[in-house]
Length: 113
Length: 109
Image (cartoon, rainbow over all chains, first blue to last red):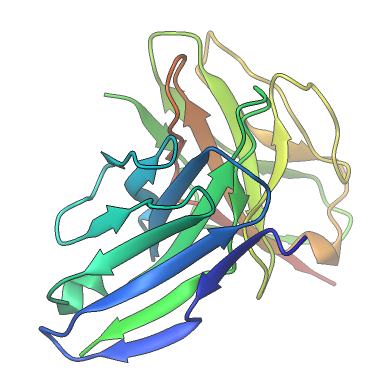
């Protein structure tokens, strides 16, 4: 099992450009999450999904959109990138067994110039 | 509002010294607390959770509801413990985790 994978690993964008980050998991997990990690801020939840076709806002959703068309994929979109969105983005997933462990991807380092 | 506070950004100790990474939370209900660890160039992974009351890699953490704390402890630090440690809280009946800002542990030889 690959676990949670993220594509791409690195990306540099210019202000105003758009892009989509892909998260994929092969563990058949219902729940998926997108976080951003910034120095001194820890991990902050952007959006999450409790199942295929559902999404919900997290702590810092502005400037991002998400879609969960397939259970195994969770896409994070930036329609018009801003320098404030320079960050490391982590995807995570978890099952509904009650153990509540979130499994994380390796991260995507995004720089917006 | 629910909050997780990790007051130390950086904790430096020598190998063999005791380690305590502090975590305090604010939540009026029954929380579920976790410690996650991120080693250099690796992904974030669960270290331990309070419900399990387990010891992982020599680390333990006890939930103190009176002091609203969940400090992570290890009696003798090892160089391989150097990493970023995050405390996290899950409110009852929610699907989300609230993370602290993290503490970087440096263990010197």
